[in-house]
Image 1 (cartoon, rainbow, N blue to C red):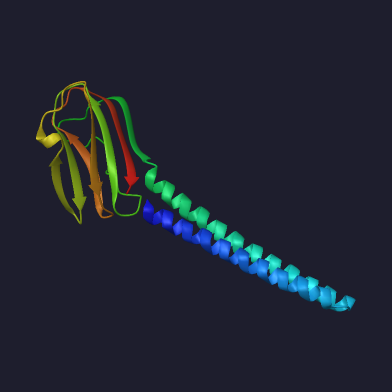
Image 2: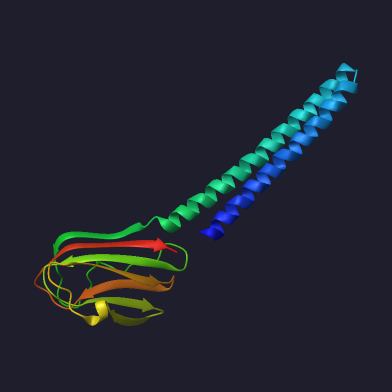
Length: 185
């Protein structure tokens, strides 16, 4: 987060510096306006001053919009996105996909999936990862059987070219809860 924080501080410093420049220009204009006697010249300087203030406000507004945009991007990195949510549904047949389709990443590389699962029957949970038409299977929990009725949480890394599904080694039970969230780094 330090990297992002530094970027925001730099934007704030630019904004402060720009405000300081505006104040200096205003003080010069005020000193000049005291020496000007013609009403037309005063009006001309006033109009130029208003244009300067307007342009300055536009620049500050753009800086604030950029800061706001960066903060939104940062919040996406740290706010998990719900990607899949199952509650109390029958397990599909053994070794078939637990989800109706594979998940693909939506956040910038790299990102992570947090998988929370609780199943009514003991079995092995597997990640099915496909990248460039090659599919591999990864056993979670070191391939050790999950205890029936117990909740487990796993975090897996993935990249933009991955698609992910899950498989369970047995059928005949119920998925009490399957919740998958995606989070950035």
